[in-house]
Length: 252
Ligand SMILES: Nc1ncnc2c1ncn2[C@@H]1O[C@H](COP(=O)(O)OP(=O)(O)O)[C@@H](O)[C@H]1O
Ligand SMILES: [Mg+2]
Image 1: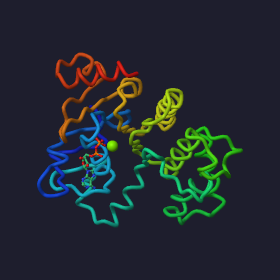
Image 2 (image 1 turned 30 degrees about the vertical axis):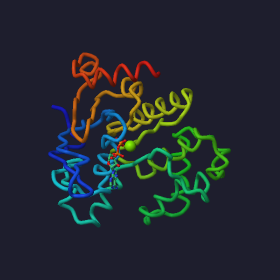
Image 3 (image 1 turned 180 degrees about the horizontal axis):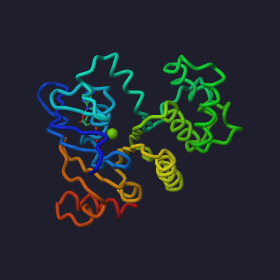
């Protein structure tokens, strides 16, 4: 039977008490696979991701991560639990005044007080290496790096605590085609190097969905429109799915 990493039931979220940004999301994300969440912009993908990370409290509904009910935990426990998840946000959100190495050391210094500084630096250097950053860039600050290098540092930082679930929000939005291909490749590589890990990519890029997704979920207006393999999507006769497919293939 399929193992489940993330199980979401009847998730609803309203920020103002009137309009529901998420309006009854039911979703299971399989363990050990790459799931891509797609949908037009403004449809609630990032809000959903932040719910998975426990950064936003749902108005109603349940979120189970690795078998644990997120909001039945105390805030302190959630903060600890969040270490099982690594996240790479759109702009990598690196600290501007820290070097690549310092950026990756940061979560380790926060959460791994049991480690000596030397051990932390060793782990961080290793994560930068597996993320494909050349050692000669380790002491550069973000403004001295290219977009691709910053992505690699962001990825290394997301990997620092050896997360069981790795999440990416729009990892290739705004990147040129070559860098996009590089990042898509990096996501796949990273997933396969970490056996058993679960990857969730939020994207409005259909090519990414088909090239890296083993499982695809399409959101529309805060609900799940369709969920399944790439083939399920190719063969769907839902109009909005077809429109999304047509748009994706034309612009690419
Ligand atoms: N913190 C917030 N407070 C109020 N509204 C929000 C907040 N975050 C997101 N929204 C709204 O929720 C909707 C979905 O946003 P988002 O999840 O960012 O869409 P996308 O699918 O493009 O990632 C948008 O209308 C956005 O304005
Ligand atoms: Mg978004």
